[in-house]
Length: 117
Image (cartoon, rainbow, N blue to C red; front, side, top):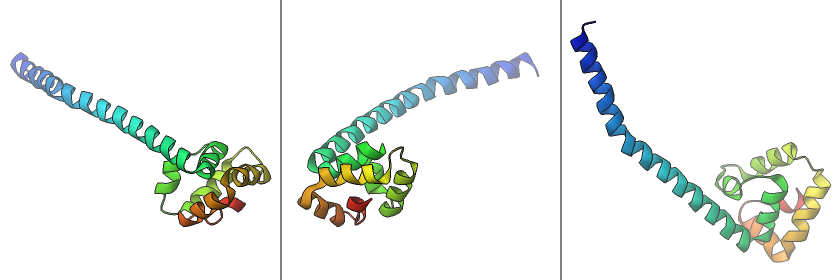
């Protein structure tokens, strides 16, 4: 390869690096903002529903991942199966956090088995 071709190739690589740097910075900023938005939404959902907060904390799952999943019951079953705690402990924690009204909210969210894990 001639030095002229190599120089042209290097020039294109340098040009690409200069052009892609702002894009990569924007992607990092968007990812950071998405993470902050996700954390805020999770906190707000936890404040609205102590039962969802208990499910999230007890099973070590994201409440947003749960609520955005196509099959919430399957998501919960898998989370319970992977949990380090016995099912009875999980159930007790959720039931004690849920209360009657929050239990109804869980059912309305498509989580009919949530209070019986």
